[in-house]
Image (cartoon, rainbow, N blue to C red; front, side, top):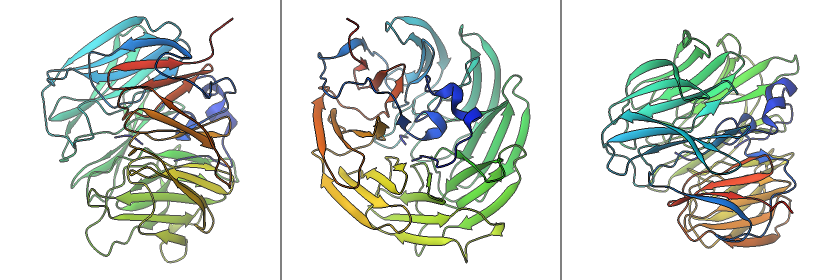
Length: 413
């Protein structure tokens, strides 16, 4: 699935190497934020396109980039093969393509057989492959050679998988949340050795990707949000710091979008296909069960289900599945503005140089300022459907459309 995050305190060591790269789903620490100042605000399927690669395969996974290596996960349309391919990010030339035997299987109508976004640490690329029944975590080097593989067993969900691994230090972390079973896993990035296998309470399969937050003492906490609630773990040892239990009046909703952290608050959304929504904003910190004390505000109707949110200082920016763009205060939930776009949205928006880039399912890219008042800057059409979250690296914007992978940037004069 396609999936919020700007940290007031981010470990410099955590994100230093990521400033020029886009190493995981939604980039540095999953924030969806790029400081690039050279992405054009006007483009089309021909204007300011540095290259455009036709895609014969299908998938909703997002691109990840390290240096001139762009990694993309895909599937044959008939489902008989999955692929991990490496593309030269400067030219669009295919460098290598690994094939995995697979089969067709049921997914949500907006999901795909290849929706899990890879992650990389600059030495290896890590990717979840679903063969239609089972999932496995693979590690490949930058030449496409398999380094290790971990079989993770059957995956159970009517929607199919869409989970993305993340990397921190020498660990590859994967939140394996399914219907009826859930575990937080960590593996040694060099060998694949299991470092953690932490059982979690399971309800419905959830797809949110964890993120890190730097505590006042300099330690990292890992924040995981699912139908069970929001849990903080020691990022080094995997020990639980605190937990907030999500309370539902009816059936537990599904968490697809990733949580966002800002101003001492972690915000998480849940929802379902029927249109039910529930957002919770929880004060960071504490020990043990913080359910009775840490809820700051909640909302049961306005926020996204699939698209992830973005935060900037006191603001939270979001675009709902139906295409409503909004800005709210993180500490109280007060709405500052809302504006309807012309298309439903599945891809998660990005913030690039203080502007929000939101992509409609119709391929229109809406660019508006990331401020407490709304100002539309431009609207650009790629001419084909887009369900995949974009990526930014080396002053270029990469968008995976239904038929092409676009590299958008200012031509070198």
